Image (cartoon, rainbow over all chains, first blue to last red; front, side, top):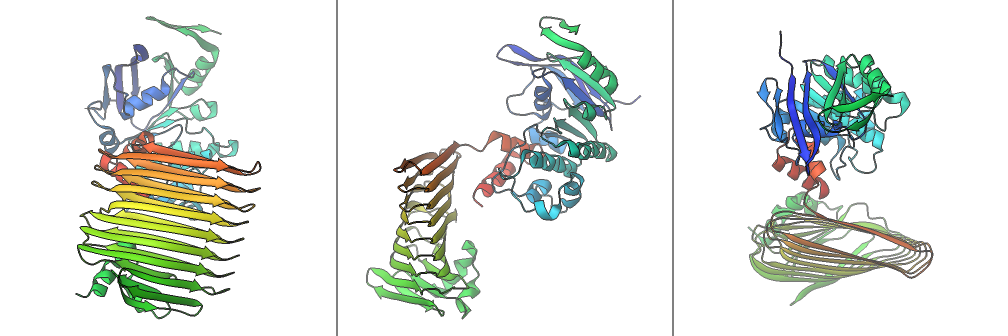
Length: 242
Length: 311
């Protein structure tokens, strides 16, 4: 029996006395793609920020083991150096920073071209462009994913990686997620898009800060579609069949 | 070491190669204090600079239709801790001419010195001037730097300026530029400043869009650390049909530094438009966290963001 790569137990996060993550349990295995489904406001992005250690996202209770080690005392860059990273739903724009610099981030021996090609962007057209407002949302998203690929993380949290991507390019995104797994990594895949979720090995549904279902991606998608969460409060999540 | 050699040795600090002063295809003026140490001209360019007891005074004239292939280097500075330098210069780019001027202001050892520049520039109809001014100051601060200029941009002419002070501590810097733009003229003013210690920066740039379909852009990027202070005033006024202007100011404040930005936009014609944006604050949190999520330490992330802004 092997230990999960990421082991989350009883994770609780509150803001202004409102519970956003409510004793959440979740485990992700090595080289697993785990899709996380849930309605808007269910806590998916908050979970991503808590795991990454973003400022202001300190949990009030619970444990998170990553590769068997306690993740929560680590600072954000220490978590990244231990193999965890996050691709934001709305990636930041940087005035003056080029795509090449962003994909290498100080690593002299890193070749950014393969990752850029993998997300469907021609290196000769993009490497010297700046990560500023001149890039479209879709281009910026792809570069964000290329940057995750370049990093070769043990666990990549992808928050809506296909948001703003045109329909014809969804397959590129799916290929990238599979490439992360093929390189030995795991993926926590936050998505609303069924065709993206279905590539996962397992999937969970988050509702009012708790995991209310885990299973195969097909089962999780059907569960999410068939049962609308109409009220979530108190001890029990009162989701009902639609 | 001679003063010329000292200034020449400092040129790489503003991105210039010392060998440009030996190249006969490249025009230059080198002045230390109120003495002209070296000058050269090229066909199509008249350089008429004179020494006076209290200033370097002169003209730089690009003849009508002339296309000066290589940048004209103006190298001003002081190689001693104290001293005064005043430059009074008329720059005329006559009709249809094109030139680039690289102005290098070098004060590597200054501790209690003064540098004043009073420039009058006229860009003739259809002419183009790109004026890049790079400052290098040593670590001591204590200087008073006063670059003041009045620039007139003729019909269909173009003027692009780029001021940068990215190394060392200046002391007190007070920039005052007034630009008048005629019909279909274009003025783009860019300034990048990194202020340290107790530096005090005042930057006032005003663009008057007098002519129809004239264009103006003021773009300022200032990063402050230590106890530095900055007041940035960007003024654009549009007086004619189709005139368009924009003021864009960003200041990053670190440590005990203080900053203010005052964009002033005025429109005096119903078919003119001027917009502005100003942002002052610490380094953007999301940018910082994005880089830290890739493994950069907070210090490395700030350095990367700041150097990007000042690029």
